[in-house]
Image 1 (spheres, one colour):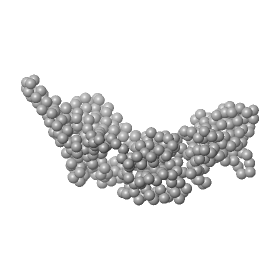
Image 2 (image 1 turned 60 degrees about the vertical axis):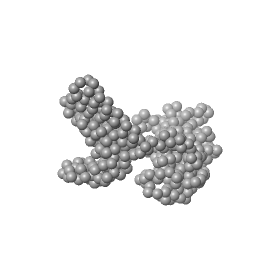
Image 3 (image 1 turned 120 degrees about the horizontal axis):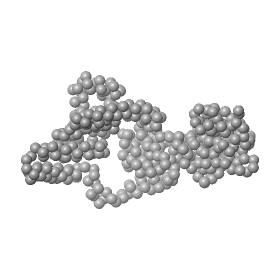
Image 4 (image 1 turned 135 degrees about the horizontal axis):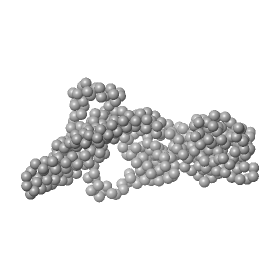
Length: 423
């Protein structure tokens, strides 16, 4: 998108709108490295991973250098193999190549470069959704070119005919081409009826609770994205150990060449303790056994004691705890402590959805402690560290009973000690 904004600036410069053009060009040029090097790493936790232009070099600067010094290579990569030429033909021919006569053709440059200079063949195919960003440009550029050409025709009646005839031809060509495109499947009555394979898939997904975390193949994950947490299983990313895993040999394997790697993945998870709860005609659902929704969570206490195995989340020191802290990472000045709990679902860095923490003082007053994170702990299967924020009301409360509540059930209680803030 920043590249498109920059080229929109070039288009405005060609229209002699110099101020707007310079602003757009500068915005595109400045926001591109900002998004790639700052924004994406900030939210994802790792560097940008989608570089697919190794033919020209491993970085953006080296790729630009190669394209400038070797223009023949750039041109050759743009049009080979033949599927690229076919895609380009299918983009422009339905509009009688009119977009090539419009200044808006400038906006095609970044979109075409992004797709056809890439090493990923999926970007070149004409039937995927990557043409969706080009389609509005094609239509607008064709209309713009036709309008410009019509101005050269004298006479209102002749001008109308000059516009109407190409428009009708464009309409007929597009209608003629529809049966070759995937969208034509919408016209088949069978498309709107569930097959036995579809029913098997919906039956498999129905055994997964709506609020459970799940790992799934890409083709299945699209049906699960309304859920709170859903990870995709791909050849380049191993999802965390979610509560449920669902795969199928009857749907596309996407980044995997065949279904065997997914079978291997299922076998590995079963060795770790996952239990197969559904299997039908290639559909498989595994469940992590450590979450029992009919049993309460278990708060870990120190061996031979009724005191909680709790630590300061930052210093990793044990009790006594102070409600207030001067540690710079806690900008609100409040202390976070870590409780160790079994039979709760880890949220992998997200704020817990179905998890509460409570503290009860010596007078029987109950205080809610905000649960901010729940992450798996290396070691015993199913052990989760729950980070909670201590409320101001507990300052100097001495020994208090803490407990957690998950899937509607309350855990056992254990003691922590809260001392007054040190001056």
